[in-house]
Length: 290
Ligand code: ADP
Image (cartoon, rainbow, N blue to C red; front, side, top):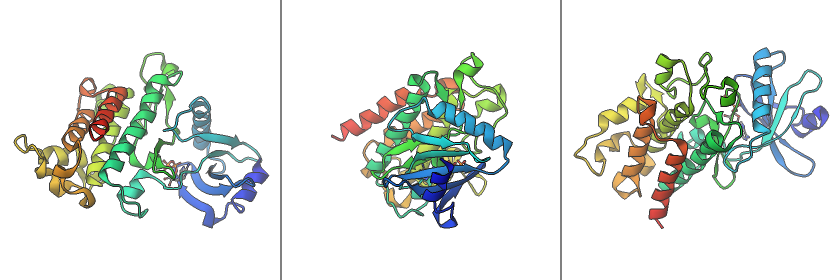
């Protein structure tokens, strides 16, 4: 209830605020049984928020997967719109990569995070009924739980594929610059392969720790420029790599990981793998490590 949510966040005090998005703020709360939750509270009177909230509730109440952030409940009372989620104590993947959260992600951990979030997305694409295109895959929408397990979050922009009946979704674009499928500009359509493109950008972030666009430069293009076919160990990429994992030759499956990331960001959707193909490929890398 509203009163309970109000109480467990100390009346939505600033000290319990953990983030904010387009629609409003996110608060940390604790229920009387000790369970910690994240509460998304829409800004009062934001129609847009209302619509996005409804989409998110509809989608999340159908989705159950260990790599998708679970919705615990919602509250529409006294003009308030709130969604209650499981709390993800280790924040967003972006925070870890930028060094702000103080969590060091070693290469193996990065592989596991890739696998987890790819599984979450593959589930949405292929197992959720009806299938769901996320439409805003990015490192700030991948959250880490207490075991650093990755979970996909933020369904505000998602749409059911079945809504359109055509296997794709067309509407005005709202995804994030730097992650957006280049085919969208010509086709005006977002497909599962658009999520794959965005995910490829996230994989490049895992290698470089850079944002998709920094100082006007696109990470996808920067990585391609550094690639040299005769450099099998990919030492040419060293300059661009995250300091803490800077030696490609010592990283298991690095070459394969890079190859997969670059396939995901192919200009043409047909050249990109599906999410479940990607899941299998990452599983293979991790298995080969024993
Ligand atoms: P946006 O709309 O900008 O994508 P979100 O609504 O996903 O933002 O959330 C804003 C911020 O709140 C996130 O960047 C994250 O730091 C935090 N956050 C969101 N959901 C959770 C959660 N379940 N657990 C912990 N922190 C969260």
